[in-house]
Amino acid sequence: MILVVGGTGTIGSEVVRLLQEAKLPFKALVRDATKARELNARGVQTAAGDLREPRTLPAALGGVDKVFVVTPLVPDQVQMRAALITAAKTAGVKHFVMSTGIGAAPDSPVQIGRWHGENQKQVQESGMAWTFVQPGFFMQNLLMYAQAIREKGEFYMPLGEGKVGWIDARDIAAVAVQVLTTPGHENQAYPLTGPQALSGAEVAAALSAAAGRPVRYVAITLEQAKQAMTGMGMPESLADAMNELYALAPPGYLAGVLDTVPKVTGRPARTFAEFAKAHAAAFGAA
Image (cartoon, one colour):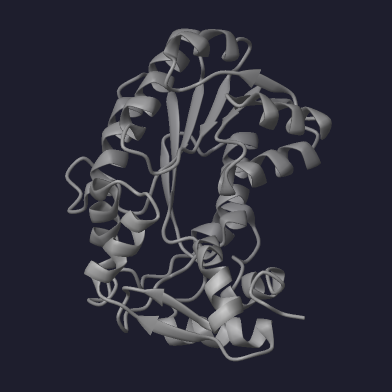
């Protein structure tokens, strides 16, 4: 039995879909009763639990031998995952699969990488078999700008002229499901990118083609990006952590392209053009 933690998010919901499509035994940890009912209505077994309430986890982990976890970027994500790691070890989980990020390590030069690295170290020291799925920037992040693209034909990011090896979250999920359901992935770290590194202008061109009208990339400063993030309610510490990642783009540190997705899944990673076409309506296509 597989327990999916984070099964209503961008990656986790696709993991749930793929496991259900394959008719594999799993359940999704859900803390929100409304979301649990929605999943149940689709035939998904759920278990009540909250990573911020460790006492709820033992019951959810009953009968589970594999865990997949993905958490949002929140101030207490290290503590949340640490609680799950401890509970999983106690429950006798055999294989712990965690979505982190490229370059995650306790000595990473960026804060988010260190947060991920701290949890990776905890899993490695737990005695459970582990696999780390380590994606770069998600293509789905562009959906946050869908309204601006529809209304103004623009999106704004602090990437300068740097290129990014954007990856589709559906491919991240496909790697995770392959890891969960086939042998040979134990104690491996899988850094993930898409098949191309694209500049902001190249992303805009792909969005223009999908939307059927011009879309323009507007490079903004890190300070402008921070103001936008905090204006939407993001804590300042998290906005600063995100800016550390954005700052890696202009020097070229986000432009690497890896073939991990095809090696693990046996099929090519999705291109940005494929992503844009799939979400064309969100970007304003008729």
